[in-house]
Length: 504
Image (cartoon, rainbow, N blue to C red; front, side):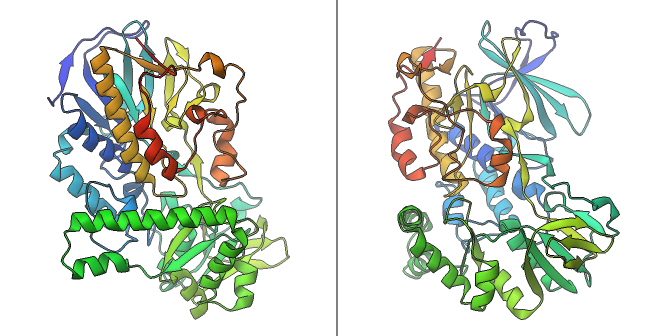
């Protein structure tokens, strides 16, 4: 059954009575996670009515919102793509290619009619008396507020604030005579041709942006406080290409290639923990194929072991080629302050620029910065304990898709798609209207820890906002492992009648 119902439903105490639309499942966000969720609902829960609310004017999330030059994936599309739709192009894809792929998923599975664009969710309130979520969304196209009720809330809105990127407050920024921009809000009218551009940052965005604009700029300088790891390589998959030559069906090519990549990634991850010195040497040697040894040592040798932060794939080593050609340069130093002409470094050197790009990360958003309430009481997710990084103690009928750092985000979208649909169908068999994760008696004195172990993974955006995130415990049920190779076996085996699930 599909479609929508417009009717008056019982409202939580204090809410104005008005016509609302009711759905079995409300999905927040039409990005890579939300479209995946919709597919799984349609395939595995065909009797459930669902809607996707998207704040932007189209699907795609990150790939629709970000408009900076050269934007591309930093992981392969064989695993970043969905398991159910083959990827048939080069492993590293542009935003345009990813949007085309997602558009095909929407069209092939008749998902467009379930999506409401221009609907930014501002509040979500749970009523135990009614076993319902009431969701208010602000319509950016009309300014009106739309109200929905739903039995189940599936949060697929991502993990960072879309409205603004993270830019540190450096002294003297107001004195700079040029233009300061963040890649997340790249201005359409920004003319960098023939200009001196300074890009601050050392992650995937900076590595993408620098080679994309280097050919048009007078010169582009990458300024980083400290180096990060990259994996340069050809933007091709030899195995997939060979299977195509043999005439293998694309569905099989997709599955075989995914399995090979995931096998290789598991081995690489294992070695990064057990053989960090050897892995470091290999990564630096790959960069050394493009740049002199002294440049690699000074600017591309990180101070931490591999995989404590995400490692971006650099197709054809393009950023290193740009530096080698002289069109781009890299400076490793810290910022003292901004000046009228550019940036004064702590070393005393001044870098002049016409445009400064702060590719300095983003602001973490805990479940979309939405105002949540449980029975008229404000919900602070920092007061909850996570159930396997997707549900939260004391919060009924809600799942948050938070993907992987060391593997493609979408791998977890598919795993959680299976879990949520299995949970919804199980609730139907039990005739349960709500399910809430709760600590068991044996968990009473369990030590509570930060959401992510900072010793294993510590990007700046997480460290800045860790205090806002749910806690984790020291038992498998209450951990956010970030380990796809464990979860691919553990999540399908979850006992939905276990004592950690409280049904009503």
